[in-house]
Length: 217
Image (cartoon, rainbow, N blue to C red; front, side):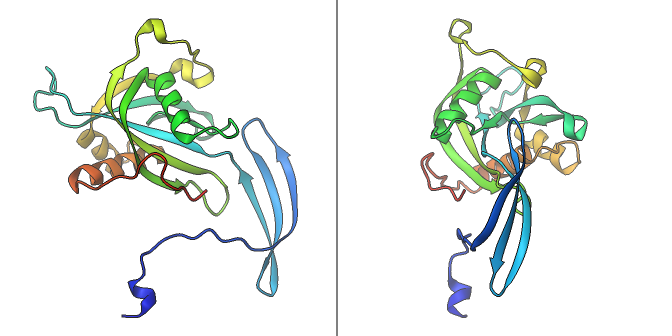
């Protein structure tokens, strides 16, 4: 085998010279960018969405109950209306990294509290991914949250806005959620990626990364 074949596969941050960059459009959350980029001896125009990035959380519990006497893994899903695709989707809690300099874990804790009314005693990184690397800068980190407890009503100081006001929450067996993915009933990318990663982590007893692990974004 060659040296290249034995090296650990890893994505690498790479920067080509940008000859011109201009903002085509600016919105509330993201903007459209157009750049002329030098590739070797040629020049290409690349148009893409400039996005602040986001975090998502898989809330996981493995506690025996009347409806789950064996304590099989369960995940919390929320349903949310997504206007661009004209559908209400089952998702995992998530939120934008739109506060400059905010630690991703802090953002994840806030979103778990606001959308699921939960806090977690254990946090790990499940997976990082670019949502649309050919057309957007959006990078997303999915956390696994365990040792969950409900936040008392007296401590809930957040106000649900926009689509959040209509969200409902539902605990679902992990196997049921995975079946929903393969049956074409669950479409949200963070949910699909996060739930599949959770199953792999539990089955393989895979050692997960710490919340402060490096992130290519």
